[in-house]
Length: 69
Image (cartoon, rainbow, N blue to C red; front, side):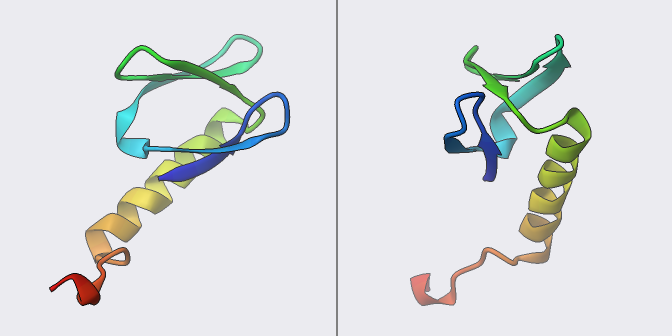
């Protein structure tokens, strides 16, 4: 999950795995695999870096919760 900021200033957390593509139109529009479009304040490279960090943490097991065993 990554946290982004909508145009109105409200924070929203989205599933990084559902991002289909990101457009700069000039607004930054994130399109999810289910067709939902979200306009955000963050720059494209910032979003890309957040997704990379999220996926890196997932592969390192940083989100693993031992209490669920």
